[in-house]
Image (cartoon, rainbow, N blue to C red; front, top):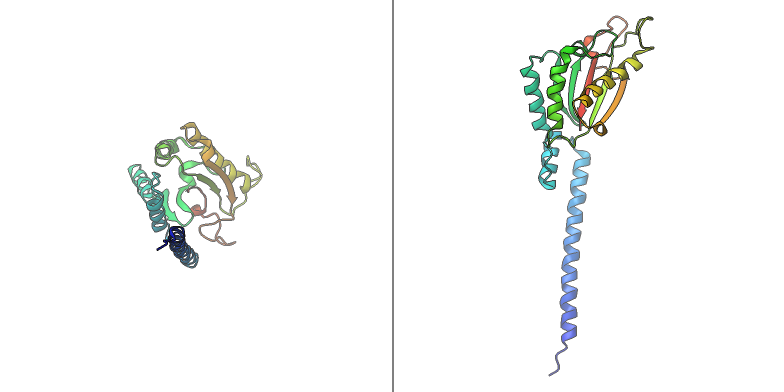
Length: 211
């Protein structure tokens, strides 16, 4: 009896390839399902980061853990009324009210801001945070600057304030490549202003968005 060994080997090889094709199709369908599910759902930044952390085995500190560290720092300096920390879909948002950082219409940091920014720099420089990007945003209220101001408008003031915060963080050895400075003037108000209600202090702030 003649045994056709090559045909048997070829048959086995074909069966193996068919199994691999079926498996790859299943993985592709699962990926498509999760992409679709992600696209139509409201993203919870904490859960999303935890999932990504699990699959990537990344050593970067999760944002929800970083949020707690920042909140503990704010509490330690008794600045709960001047600094707020929130986890958003864009990243971890740290808002500094302008009264702790600057005098009215100025962009030079007050000395009272140095301790909190120094401690913040230490956290940003830690090994499990140092890969994160930081967008520093300057915001103002809707009241125009006075004629004798150092800046032509709130656009220049908001940008100068964001840059001033970045310069101080750079002096504490935070890598310059991690930063983006943005001046929004009064285009991103936290609370709407009207002709009868302008100059709200809640709108005058510098925000650090850690991504």
